[in-house]
Length: 133
Length: 387
Image (cartoon, rainbow over all chains, first blue to last red; front, side, top):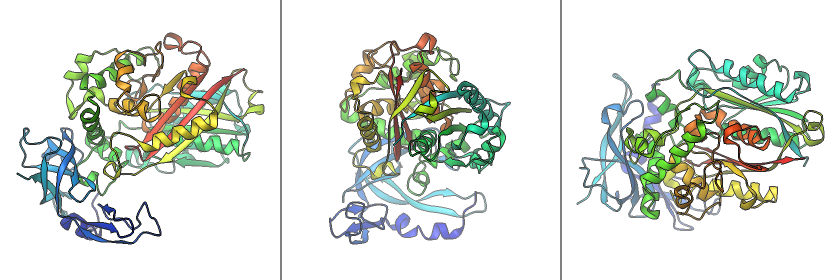
C-alpha cells in the first residue's frame, strides 16, 4: 500500500538523526522517542536526546526469507544493537562479512536507503549499522 | 464472580483449505461446537470472535457481525477481539468475563483465520504487523527474525543448542501425528529439522509454525446452567492476561516474556493451584524457541533449565509435564486467531478423556498459554474437570 508523504516526513528526526528521549527525572534514555517516561509516567520530564550512534551487537540473525519490499536485500543481517548510552534498538548490519559479526561486535550508525515505495513512490531513508573497527 | 464452564467444543481440521473461505471455516467449527454443547441458537446471549487480520488476509473486516449472521445468531451482540496471535485467547477471556460477571449466561467464543490466500512475502508482512511497524518492520524484520534474535541471545546466555530447539519440533510433530485435526500428520527427525532451509538464523523452516487455515469455537456457560447440558463439566478456574512492550528491543531482557510471567501468576492465583497440579499445558510455540521461553516464563522451570526437561523427553504426552499434546502451533498449525481457542479445545478433549492415542493419563487440570506478537500480549487459562 502506498503511504502518504507526511508519514515519512514526521519520522525524519528519529530515522535520519537518531534523536530519542531522556527522562530528566530518572535519567533513563529511550530510543525510539517516548512521550511519557514509562517508569515515572506523569512525574517524568521528557526531552529530546541525541544518541552518538555507537554501540555493540546484543543479538543478531541472518534473514533469508524477507518481507515484501525487502526481498532484493536478502539475505541480510538484522541485529539488536545496544547503544553506548544504554537503550537497545533494532537495525540491519550492512557491509559486513560473516566472520565480522558476533555478540559484542562494535558497530556504528550509517545513513542508508531502507526501501522504495514501488517504482514511482518515495525512497525511504533511515539508519543501518556498520562494523566499527 | 460466578463459576463458568466450557460446555461445547468445535474445530475444523487445520491446514491448507483451498476450497474454503473465512466464513466456511467459522461456520463449520461453530456448527460442531453448538452440536457438541447441544444448545439452541436462541439460548446464546453473546459472541466473541478472535481474528488477527481478516481485513488484510481476505479483505473482510467486521468479522464478528459476519460470523453471527452466517451462524444464525442474529441479533445477539457480536464482538471481534484482536490481540495479534493472542486474539483467540482474548476472545475466550472476554467470553469468560461476560459469563462470570453475570452479564450473560451462555456465550460463544470463536477464533478463525484464513491465511493461504496470500503469498509468503505478503503474509510475512501482515504477520509482521503484530510487532512495531515503525521500529521493527521498517528495518526489515519478520516474525521469524524477531524470535531468532531471542533464540540467539538465549543460546548465548544459557548455552541452548539448535538441537534442543529441534527436539521441540520433533516432539510436536509426534503429537500432531496422533491428532486428526492437526495440519501435519508425519513424524520428523532432529536431522530433518537441522537440515531444513534457514528462514532467519538460527531458526530453520522446521523451527517455525506453518501458515494455516482453520477455525475453533467453544461454548461457555454459567456453572449451574452448564449442568443442564453436560455431565463432564470443564470449569475455567483461572484466567490471566498481561501486556508488555510491543517492540522486542524495548524490553529489559529479550530472553524472557514478562507478560507471560504476569498472566500465569494471575491465573494460578485465581485458580488456587500450583505448577505441580497442572497435568498438561498447551503453550504458544510459534517457533521452537518460544516453547522453551514459555516453559520458563510460565514458571515450570528456572531460566535456562527447560532444555534439560526437553532433552529428557519429559514434555511428551506420556512424560512428567505433557506440553502441546495437540501438536502445538508447530505441528497442529497456526491459523493465528484460531490458535487460542484451539488450545482450549485440546485441553477440554484431554480432560474429557477423548484424546485417543495422545491421551494424558488421569488428566484433571490443564493450562493454556497464548501470546500476541513477540510478547506484548499474553493470556493464560487454567481449566479443571469437575465431577
